[in-house]
Length: 283
Image (cartoon, rainbow, N blue to C red; front, side, top):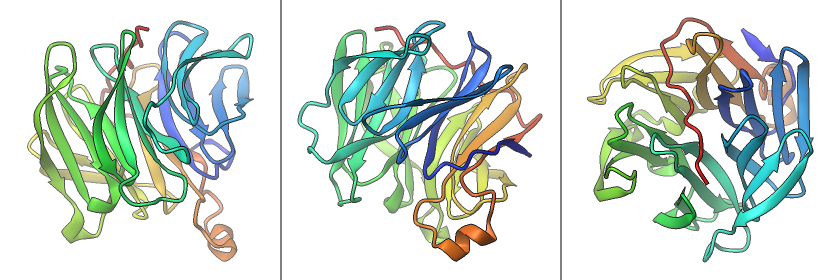
């Protein structure tokens, strides 16, 4: 079903805010944050591209923007820069991101022109921003196992989803290993979320679907949606069993947009699996 009729150019970064009981998401290219709650649809516009967020408290979000990580007040529409992405190329923008179980925040950056190897993945943790992985083109698939012992990420053009072990504070230890090799299947890993059973729900750009994979990497099933470019899923709703998915129109020709009128909308599928509660970001 369609959860929200507004068509994003590049929908991304959905997450369920447990204190506000509402889904939030972004349209990166139109530089805005969106939500829909019991009061109806709302939008906030920014001077930079914004792509992902974590909740700090009822009214404050940590948002990844082109300028860096900002603290944004939803009620007063005020913001302050927490930190910049030191050493990141000047024409980069943020992409996929998510809060980890240790209350840190991971965010990928990439070239606005999709220049190869210009991107990186950073982690903010209690006052420290550290670059974790570099040389990426389109960083995606940032998500975490329920026990907090593993993180996942991808560089979409590679077709590989990687898994890396985490220490007790949530920092990577050891080298990332391939969890999924989707290259032979021609599938493009995009955003992902992991449910309480450890199942990964992975959006696959260009395939009109979110695919589920077990902790061992075995394919389980796929859920199809009426848009070609499904970008990122998130669990939410009253019982955290609804799978929400953002989508995009980016790169679609006018005739393709006309043939797929739901492209760019947010979808919802009820009773899919039990999702994890989105952790709070601790500054």
